[in-house]
Length: 115
Image (tube, rainbow, N blue to C red; front, side, top):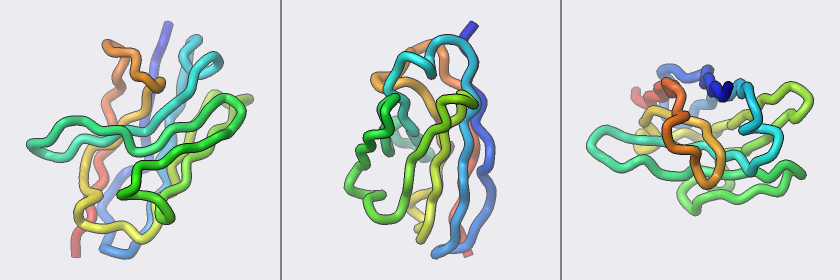
């Protein structure tokens, strides 16, 4: 059974940092490229970053140099270290495979960047 549970969000001031975690169960993590996605109010969900099972990473331009994606395959856990946060980073953050397994989205974790 596939389950994705995101955690680590919160309220942070501009320029601050947060570390998100994604705990995965089932086959989704072991055999897939994984990704962090986000959805801001009134906007479509978008990919933020992805990571292969071997640790190769890709980032969208709007987070390059600020966010770092990583994964611990032994723990079936993925992380997103977010530094230099901006108000436009405010969104609900989700993890999933890349491309995503539709129907298996978790509840997400809210990140709010505001002074």
